[in-house]
Every structure is written in structure tokens, then in C-alpha cells.
Image 1 (cartoon, helix red, strand yellow):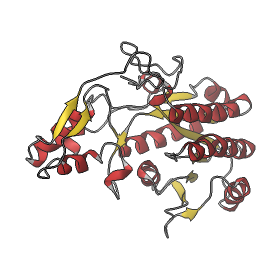
Image 2 (cartoon, rainbow, N blue to C red):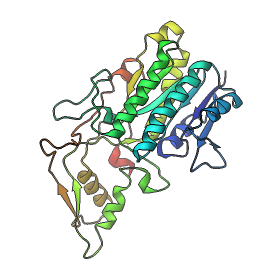
Image 3 (tube, helix red, strand yellow):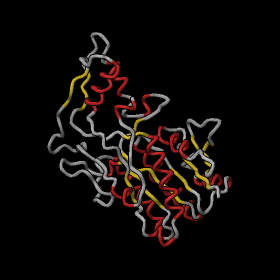
Image 4 (spheres, rainbow, N blue to C red):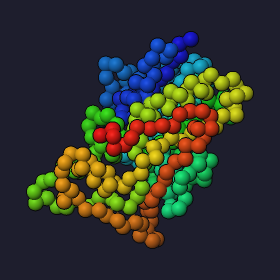
Length: 302
């Protein structure tokens, strides 16, 4: 039986790899985009609930199919509209049709205080910033579906890297620009964070895991699915600060790093906004249900 997968945000950094993972004989996959829609994707405004319903009906997505929302915005209004309201709309529409929805969330739902990581999938959440809060609200909207269908799945991932159309798509890939910027003569030295711990994870690996999750949950009977975890986490074990990543990139390129200085200061006690130190995600829940958690070697990929 050929199943269908609908990937929103399919023109983005992660969405492209999720789309690619499902391009196989046993799946029919449709990707959507908005500002960057292409000839191979459908244009869809996630703020338009009627357009979402119309597309689900047009592609005849139904019970046994899968939806992957993947989109985030830097501005607070956009983040709330897409991570919360659009997710709620998608969750309701998929629930009504018996469609599995896999919502991509973030490690930033956790506070990242020193000594707390790694966080299990059922650990208490406490987002350190507005982005993390909107993603947590999106988790709540997805989990509402489980009250009737057990088809709302959350997948938390950390900072991502991979094949890009522009280095600015990824908070990791963009560090290449900083390394080159540091080569400019008479340029002001760049201060790079050398305190917060990051676990850069490849988008191809996340795409593979999304497909594995879809197969696992759709193959399960209703009673079996009701006992499967509804919040899953995936992460590389490669651990770096941003400065250490710049060091690695400079080494690979054979460039000096004189133009970049490590910034080792942590949070200021009592500051209104506290940066997370370490939000490392435990992958135990994935392992427990038999989904492979291997990842590409970070340094080797470059």
C-alpha cells in the first residue's frame, strides 16, 4: 500500500530533507512552501485554515497518512502565528481525517541550566526564550489530538546543520561566514560564544528519523499506538561551543583563527533573560521503540 506524506515548510533547511526521505516507491509525498515555493512544491499559507483543509482534501490525505509541519520565524508575531495557531489548525484538520501529524519542536523547551542535561522526553519544561515558548505551545496543540486519536507526535531536535541554499539558513552553517569574515584585514575581532553547549544534528538524519517514526506509528494497531510515547527526541552526541565549531572549520579550511576570540562569559546573575547552557536531549524514548539513533559525524560531514 502506498502511503502519503505532506510536508509543510518543504522548501526550508529541514523540510527539504524530510521531503527527500519520503521520496520512495512506498510513499507519495507532497511538499508545500510559501515565500520560497518552487515548481516542485505547492504554495500554502499556514495562516489560512481554509487553504490547509482544501489542500488536505485535494491530495486526498486520509487515515494512515502523515503530515510534517516544519516552520519557524524570527519575529515574535510570526513565531506565535506559525508555531502555535497554524499548528493548532493543522492538528485539528489532521485529527478530523485520522492523519498522523509529526510536529517538529526544539530543545529550547528546556531551561538548559548547568547540571540538568540530558533531558528525558518527560522532563519538566521551562523555555528560556519566546521562541522556545511558542514551540512548547505548539506541542500542546499537537498533544490535544491524542485525546481522541493518538496521532499527534512531537519530535524535539537541537540546532541543525546540513545542505543549504544559503549559509544563513542554519545557525551552524552560517559560522563559515564568520570564519571567512575573521580573515579580513583590520576588521574588528569577532567575539564568539565559548560557553553554551550545542549538539549540531544533520538534517538528513532528522529526515530519516521522521520517516522511521511515521512507519512505526502507522504500522501499529490502535491499542499499540496508544501505548507508544507521544513526545520523542533526537540529537547528535557531538558536543561543541560555537567557538569550537569555528576552530574546527578553520582547521578544515587551513585558515588562521586570529580574527575570532572566545567569549567564555556565562549568564549574568539576575538578568531578565537567561541563556541556556546545555539543553542536550536524551534519545532514550526513540531507542526504546526500536528506532535507530545513529548520526553522521559532525566534523567528517564538512
